[in-house]
Image (tube, rainbow, N blue to C red; front, top):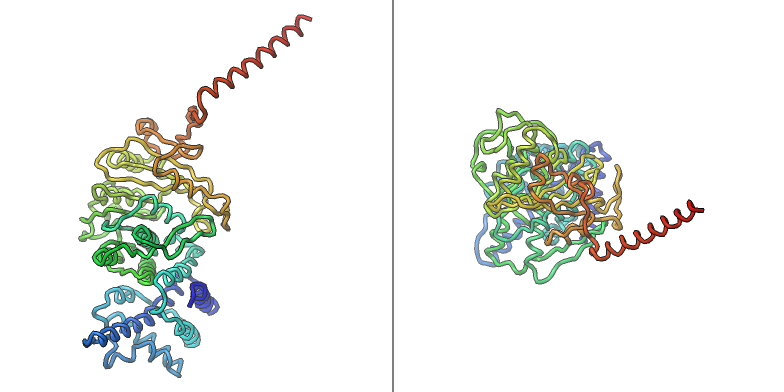
Length: 501
């Protein structure tokens, strides 16, 4: 199947569920995901059996003996659809939860899966559609794109849209942070694993002789997908098993994140349900990472009594807590890219001021990029910015601000592509040298301290502070002043002559 055919297939699956009353995206994505898992697992086992035969070895499949009935190719062709419905609901999910010993990703995914397919007819219809997909013959990039296409429906999901960050914003942040092979990368509020997968694609593209494709998106952004063919065997083992860590408190998020990573060809070994802010002590509290990428929840109060001891600032505001956690969890030399609610940057409350002070004095805050109102529409109209900071062991000296006016989409509730208005490529172009323009400026830390540590970009716009950017040569300005002065002298002389007459 081609990329377009696969995306049409998942659209057809989603529409089937919607037409039968399963209208919540998280619910039907979960149901489609566990059926994908069931089909993929048999294909993977068949591949292992074939490889063992070619090597002259024996392989004990999870579907051997009495477990053969759990093969997709067996139960999916049951002539009695009611019997198939009962088998999937009562037996198959239990088998995946308890009967598999060496597939931690599968067990982790199914641990909290619930069966929400309403009747045998719908199950039979979606099984027939999925049976036509041969996952083992499809490139991981195409499978990943297919699942991203499916999860894009979360963007219109109202209350649960919060865990899907716009991918063009994610890619911009990842390019600025520039993660490398050998680094550990964490998202403590990982949602559907968008940041982790963008970092994975970035590392592959940076270690490729050739690229699979150079894609220009509908909003005018472009990016490369690389094969990673310059990576050695040890690099791949490290990349697939030791690099990526993701936590989220929401079970629905984690299930989708695991499936998303597996379909992109990436193990989800270190992606699991965990409350990064609160709960009993665990080993992860002592861990730190080279790179942290996140879009933590903008809203929500956390009980101070339940907060983890590692958090440097005790507050109810989850945004303050998450950024504080990232400061504490960043390895020396490490870099963080995080999206924050704009209010965090200028609020006068005690915890907000303390956090900004910590960012400037304990970290090297390198960039504050203000995003336009409505980037997260249609489900969240909150104004946001993202921060880039490093743990250099030295305090901040200067902060580079960029005020994005347009991100390649129209403003308003129903955002549509508008590639003629997109500042994100300019952000990436100016970022390496921190160039100054009418949309970007450098501010010394002393000026920020004088302003109660406020980090809102608009506070330091040169025109707002009565400063003038010398974008023209002084000689040119003096010549212009001279011309204006001459014109004024002529006018005054004319007035004198007029009064004298």
